Image (cartoon, rainbow, N blue to C red; front, side, top):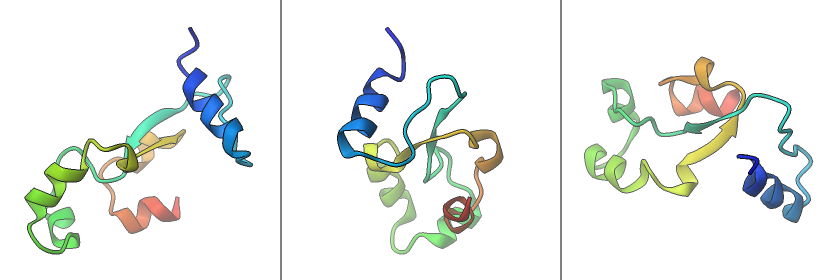
Length: 82
């Protein structure tokens, strides 16, 4: 089974303009990184560790991208701009 089958169905069902192209190399990126850096802790308001634990592996924290290696652990505002 094509690993992008579900992604493609979701994109097509929403009529998104940027559809998943299985011929391109894309990966899943955590917008809130799996490992918190001091910089990321400062960006989060409140109990950063609790927020991280609650959100890190949720569907809303994941995105498909061809820029995973470039995004790394950069600040959210920088990831958002990319």
